[in-house]
Picture 1 (cartoon, helix red, strand yellow):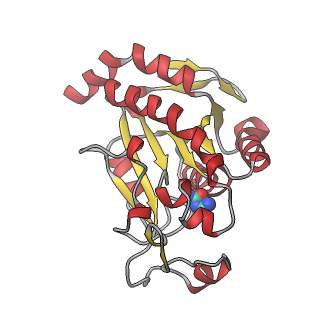
Picture 2 (tube, rainbow, N blue to C red):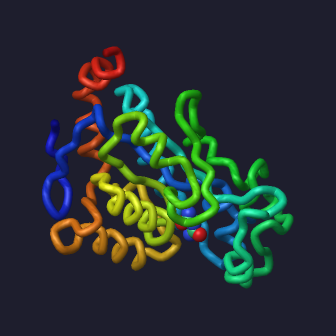
Picture 3 (cartoon, rainbow, N blue to C red):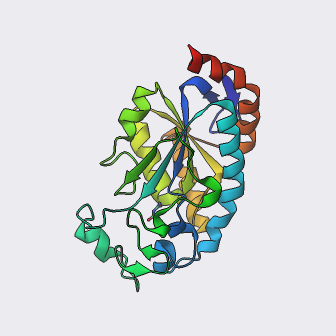
Length: 232
Ligand code: C5J
């Protein structure tokens, strides 16, 4: 166990029962012409997350940490899209409409892909989710429990929507969650800050908030430990 610097108090990181969960780092949220832009957001605000998250992802892979990715999206026939979700955005393009990166938030379309810098590798499950929380209507919990995971390192976008919803869902299911401030992002800086404050408030009512520097250092030091568990 390694104590990682975090708020409201150090996070007791145990690499062999932890997973890195990367939420919705999709072109539809990060690039012009996607869902985020259709809602009127300045998507350039999310770009700063990619480099620190890529550094962490490479460190996690090198150390043998379990990595899992999520994507928000819907079936091509939109049968898993609640009418209310489709109506709500009220932008020029709704979910399922054709945009510059294909149909908005639809499985298999270019915009639904994870950005190339963070593309999943073989052996890293990708969970497709129709909602904001990664546990809703998915097999994420089953996959994590089958791997013996009890701690989640949560990263991705956006801090106050899918990251926060997933952290809350995980917390209610008994996982310890560490959310990394530099590896999560929002179109609204003030929402990012407040969302992180909400997680750590009241002595960690939802979990912990940390920085990737501490985790990358811990992963570099724990290579042998994680590999030993995988080999046993
Ligand atoms: C949103 C997400 N913001 N991944 N999705 O609609 O946070």
